[in-house]
Length: 305
Image (cartoon, rainbow, N blue to C red; front, side, top):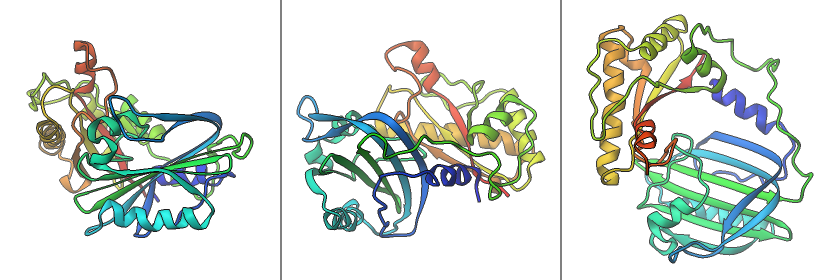
């Protein structure tokens, strides 16, 4: 089981009020949280200069699934989930597909977990909000390159969700990973880390130095933990087109992978690469400091012993 998977199971072991939806295709949970008192904005109409929201307060649970969906459309994934909500007594308040929702503007108005936990293809997504008495739930469904993503957020009466506690003594937890640097310790604790010294000018994908402290630390971590595999995830600022930034972000991840292979001798089979463009910023894009922060590469653990 992966480190992230163990954390997810620890969260899901807590009592929650969220309805258990059965995914229509093979799926894995990539994110889960349960908050005893919080708020969530539910979209109740399409974007038209702004998106109309209903802000609901109460106990909030959120889960994200990644589905094996080589031929499925967002509607084909959403339809059986909607049927389950109907059967459970939920009434649909609002539902839409990509263009009818408001496209780019609607997607970035709603609360969606960042990649790689959740990915929303701007050309292929669906949204649904439903209500049963005082409980609200909304779904965001998208497909891209044979993979489906589903995010469900449910808000119910206060007290239905117990505080989340992650146990470190769970006997099902994976063996402790060896960690002797900041990058390694962050990976051990969170399952992901920013490789902060890999800096890029706008539009650039080059890593001109032969060695970088963060990659040295990552290489040492991988040698110390030979069963671990990782993914490098490239990011950009918001300058330029979405398509161009997706390509640039993937190339940045590939550049970091090349250094790990060529300089440090790490097997490429242990290093995946992904690019998410400007869709998962860490900072605002209206300042140079913010844009520089967003041009980055992160490492995510994808499997452990």
